[in-house]
Image 1 (tube, protein in one colour):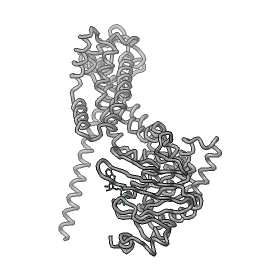
Image 2: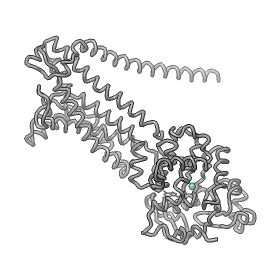
Image 3: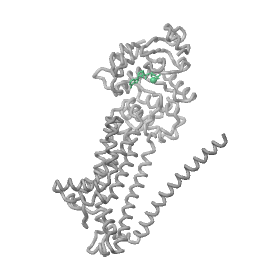
Image 4: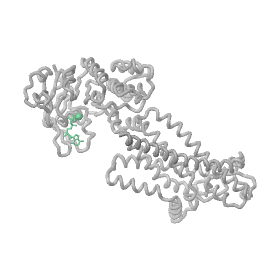
Length: 286
Length: 251
Ligand SMILES: Nc1ncnc2c1ncn2[C@@H]1O[C@H](COP(=O)(O)OP(=O)(O)OP(=O)(O)O)[C@@H](O)[C@H]1O
Ligand SMILES: [Mg+2]
């Protein structure tokens, strides 16, 4: 009797050590990445960097900034996430209300999971081929559409889970009070799901704004600020990539600064949506 | 006394299974009607036909009539939300809406546009929370999430929320089975004080509760109404053998 209890505590102890260990490892790696970015990037992170476009000789270490890439990334990732949201919400609702956990429903989920796992370079190549066949060239439009495709499976699956976790009794409770379907959707279902939807959107946004491979061929690169959908556009991940590839230490440092800007953008968005989410979360049924 | 609800030749099928068989009932106003019977005999199904929840289940077929003040609630020109507005439902497990305590009670009044301004809504919220016996416990935290209440308090909140749409009928499907004894007592007490204003129909599995509440009793078995009548008669002089056996605790 005594021995058994002892063993259970030992198992508990080992499990806890393992969990804390993995957590510490991940935290350490994350910390190192951030530390590298800050250490190497912060010195070059000037106001000029975020408020100007590259001037002549920028890639040789002369003046200018990466406003073109910041705006380009925000446009493409923002647009792509938004369009993906418009499509993924109905898909997720359809998946739940009509397919449910049927065989077809699970096939669709499997396909979405595979799409989620496909490397982004494949999306880039796919988008590129489509664009070629349509006679389009690398542009803000092309990049946005490719990022939409990249975001779509992530967002759909995340929302699928959100809707699946919706308590079934909830809409019955509202129906019993004489609600119409629309009133339930707007006043009960939506408030209940909003925090989860926000998380799904953020998850997708974080993935697409940091992706270089998918926009390499489809969006191209330019030193100009994007003004039209049909011209090439710069992006932060490619700015990091190109600057890091130069032989000049000053430019390489700016690559780290660009990466830092990208990280800060995602961080601000994450914290912002967390704050909103916890607000919205107050009344949801767990 | 004129019956409030009349059920005529009601039959319900779930796919191939015949769940309710030729039900004929008259339910009187200002009385508590208690439905009893073994598990699976169709009590929940019967309640669901009364507020048309039955049509939410796929593959059901309902025939016969349910007359509310003489009008068939299944007829084509009847608005289902109006039917449900006239009927308050207490579910087995309380299910608060994802909003604050006050908003839960206000919700029904708002969707049915029953009050013209906030002041009136606030007054009614207090009124119905008082009627449900919850006001004193929550008056200082009306904006807290409804989920922060205990289960027993949540059930009383659901009662207040249901009463706030000013229904004529209260349905309860084992409304106290998830509650502790004290909370159950609370609910029972409320139902007894409310019965003069409403037509109340309660499903219960506890004989003691049935005896405490019932004015009328409906005893069901395998989808049929075996015996129905005044509580005193059914409990003390049951005519049907099945009822006698059930009351004796034989099944
Ligand atoms: N959605 C459904 N599909 C098919 N059959 C169902 C469905 N719901 C209920 N039934 C069947 O209908 C019969 C009556 O069910 P009902 O829920 O009305 O019983 P009940 O008297 O409320 O039982 P309990 O006391 O256990 O709650 C049962 O045989 C049940 O298996
Ligand atoms: Mg039941």
